[in-house]
Amino acid sequence: MKTYKKHIIFALALIFFAGCVSTPVEKKVSIKGPVYAIDGVSYIPLSSVVNEYGLKRKWDSIAKKLTIYQGKKEAVLAIGSNVALIEGVPKKLGAPVRMHRSIIVLPEDFSSSELAKIFTKKDKIVIRKPESTLPPTCDYIIAKIVVDPGHGGKDPGAMGKLGVREKYITLDIAKRLKHHLENACIEVKLTRTDDRFISLWKRADIANKEEVDFFISVHANAARSRYAKGFEVYYLSEAVDDDARAVAAAENASLKYETSSFGNKRPSTDLEATLWDIEHSENRKESIELAESIASLAYTRLGVKNRGTKAARFYVLKGARMPSVLVEVGFISNTAEAKRLKDSSYREQLAKAIAEGIISYKKKYETTEGFTK
Image 1: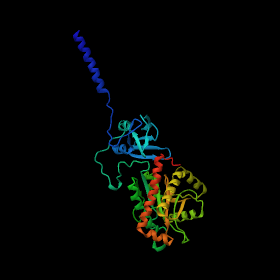
Image 2: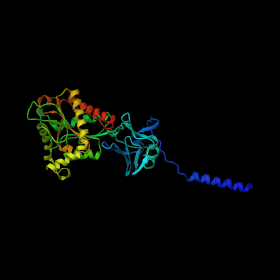
Image 3: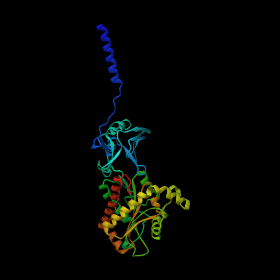
């Protein structure tokens, strides 16, 4: 009888230990960074997740959809939703993805366990270029912008009073703008960093390939009247007044320096123009509000004549697949404004004012999760 009991106990022990061995241990990654308790749920910043796994990300401002990926593996999430697509398969989260203090946060359990199943934790030693390294808390919806210094190289742009050349003014302001934006946790890519020619189509293509949130093209204005002056910001649409058409014609004149164009084709018919509008309609609302914010801050900070925001068909904005604006910082055909633009301290004020306008809209956009009006 004792022997029989021993066999039973041994068999049960084998079953128990076999079960322990065969049950897979859930893979879990310890993610470094702050933890926020929101409605009884632990959340961690998206930036901590991105840094831990070495992920890349894409943000769809229209659908409020976030895609994080590592090679061909990806996870798709949406603000306010507790369902994610993991490698195309729906997965319910314990709590929804949220915005907290203007940053995106993910449920901690989901980030450390579910994401660990598809993403590989990156190596501890990572070499980064100092100029592209941002503070770990800089994980915002609007995190990356392309700034485009107008003209350059064989395309001098407008030639103004006192020997002022548009291509040099725009490059200097763009570099200063980059500095101010990066201090505000926005990564910035310049379409050019020296005096070189870049086609209008290539500039927009750079923004598309960088998968940025905004495209800002910097220019200086010129007019036949020496009395014309002021600061204005444009967005892409049909021009509604003669001044806007004239400015667009002047900036689009850079096409004469190009040997080819986007898709080897330029919009030349009413139908093509209509299709152009449809393609950009989804970004127009954000472009208008961004333009208004920049124009308003420039007027407040610089005391310049505010010529407002206007619509025009700029080829440099056509190819951009994100909200985009073209900033005219002043008239170099006006002696007084040309004198100010030659002054490095004034260009610094200009760059700072434009940066503040972008940052102001950025905060409003993120606080309302993209619904600014």
